[in-house]
Image (cartoon, rainbow, N blue to C red; front, side, top):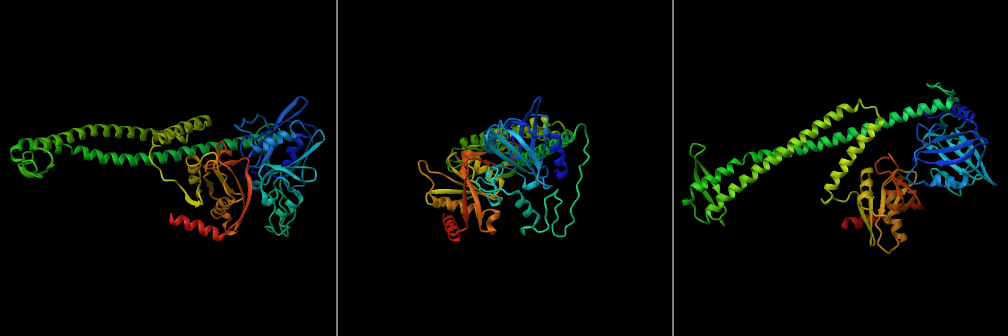
Length: 498
């Protein structure tokens, strides 16, 4: 649930932002920013969330957790507006765009906070609209340093006036669009005490706690299902070995029969035909090693019997251990739905994550096939991850800090990595090869063109609680790529011939 324009107006009225001072800027994750503000005798925090389905701003009671590294946009705002005074704060019409003017000494900065669900953003501009920086850099929308941000044009485009998605308007807008009937909005009644800011904060806090509880529960449930499947597979293999070891008594019988028939065996014989005294003297044929003496053959079967008995004890211990772990997982799974304490779920997830990391570390010596696709550009290896799992595995296990990462802007797609050569810079031709692969293995393939950003792997940061494979680039550079069929054919042909 995102805020509608009437609710945003009420929140701004309650906040009374003009004449407050900016004391701090925090960005705890890749969707949230918090301003620490001060008016005499009344320090407070204002949270800005750009999450789809939860875009909002409101006062919040607690200081946000400190990020391990200060993200790019927060660092920019600290250098630009910390210590400044808010001159004005108002919503632009009823289009869920908040304009905040901040002045520090003679320097003015305009913060445009657009709360449009999946298109939400915070854009910092000069008075003339020149973009200084943006929370989300989107070159195709003109939301990048040096471009000009025109909120009226953005609203008009979203309304369909420019021909883009006719008949569509941002949620919360009452501007007429063609013959569409304007949608009416009201301030919703939310449970709880306090003013609307407090009730909104409580509402979203409860929603986020439930979402985190569900997310942790799903993670644990998926882990337990996967672990159970692996344990059942191991259990089946161990039971097959147990069945083989249980037949080890036949090896002792072979040794006994050989010892009782030593006088009938000559060195070089490959078989002994004897009478099985344990089975009513029925004929039995025993294979011999022609390079051994008759006594050595008997001793060999006794040794096999001894090893099988020892192996049987080990297998049964392992079977008992797996049965105990399966029972423990069943108990944890049965109790999962009743656990409502988030810290307990977090600790439980940390425990299973540590266990899984330890198992992977123990098996690290086993050779693993490199995931994804591989291409060669001259002396350089290019790796392409086609899924979140492949992206994550390539990033964690097969890249180093100076390797280069490429990805399309505004389009989901593959991660592309170029392995660097020590002491060498990556040639432009290789960068274009990698860029073509990044566009081809993305949703931009149909348009044949995309803006990319690229940076070294050491400048990628994994957001806390982010999805598998998700990274936030810093110190990124821009690259515009139009698909070159001849280049792609060369890369594919070279790959097929390897």
